[in-house]
Length: 376
Image 1 (cartoon, rainbow, N blue to C red):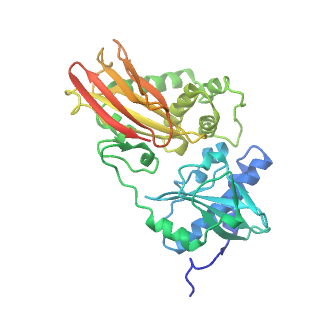
Image 2 (spheres, rainbow, N blue to C red):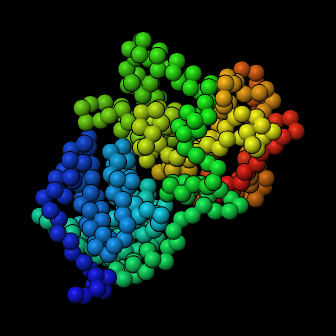
Image 3 (tube, rainbow, N blue to C red):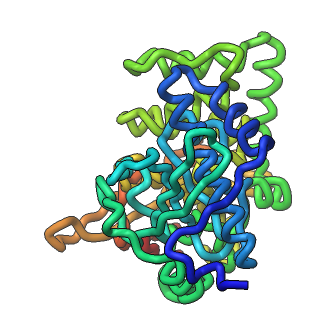
């Protein structure tokens, strides 16, 4: 049998169940144009999924953004997640077309871009080749052969936690540094009393007043030009995912993210949040530093740094200082800080970072100091 990577192109049959999956995803969309986009994207992802499985390359559809309803709604996305490696973008190209447009929202965080041609009956998908770097338009003549794709996948090192700098982009691939754990895990294991009490009170109030889950979402959409997505096709988490992707207001973005953390914390568009326990690192003070990262459509990242009290403390100690330092585009030092007042149950800073940016986060309390260094 000929080596599967030795072909210049490779065709994969699509079964009725594949078309059914694509149809189901397409029915969720608000317009016919968007439905066609999602239908073709889904089939392209499935073709690459089957091809890589034939090569015994590990793939994970469920962790792919393209398999998340909110991500499909909010972006033109067709990724396939390779555990420990990253994401391949699987772009459908119309039959006989010489070029394929690549949407801006997928220009970063990709191992490469595979072009897939779907025949008119949608019964066969043909992998034409790939390119490693994004461009607004990819020409067929630019495509590299499939054996080159396999070489790149095998040469891509498995992501592992780094030393020195905490690489936040690896968090997006579920690779976490020692000492940083899931938010819910720390909150409930270490008894973040103030946060849990506030959360429980919020839930009781919502239940007592019979407040619709749509009400806070409607409030967020009221400041946006986009109309709220509220019908039988869209869950509240879908509306929040769409808003996170589309809003230009960082306050709205993070408010939507926090609502999504409560409703669907595993949703990929909720970003990643991890926390570290400060007790062994800040003179025994029972607190936690949370760092959250949200990829944005313009290829930058929204970052949220927040400090919570732990154990049975309701408030942060007055005078606790959270400080972020780094450099601007010209290499000049920049610094931002916030200091806890009496009765503050958290303090926070919000940042926008570009790939490759480095910054340091410091916490100061009396003579004690905790510091971590991050790279995006």
